Image (cartoon, rainbow, N blue to C red):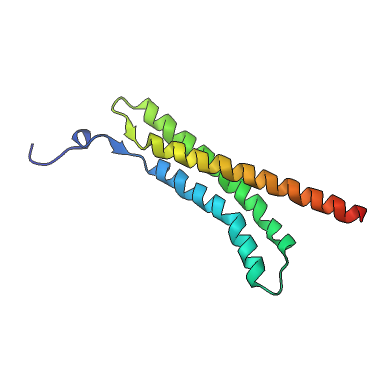
Length: 118
């Protein structure tokens, strides 16, 4: 053959695996970006960065679900879809972000309880 075909180029690439990584990176960046924004702004305090906690949690869960779809797609095909490792990395980013979001939510909860007691 003069030109490579879809079956001769090593399998299809998984765009959803890279999307999982992108969403995972965005979810990891949500909390630090909110904290930095409160440091640069005179109008907001550190407690205001808690608004980014649900964003980080939702994006983390989205990253996990997108990575799951990418890995399932790769396992369904006979030739395999490249990017299963990338999907695993996206899943790991999503899990870390989800755990950071849950930790942030617990920290805000403790802060609010201690503020109410004091």
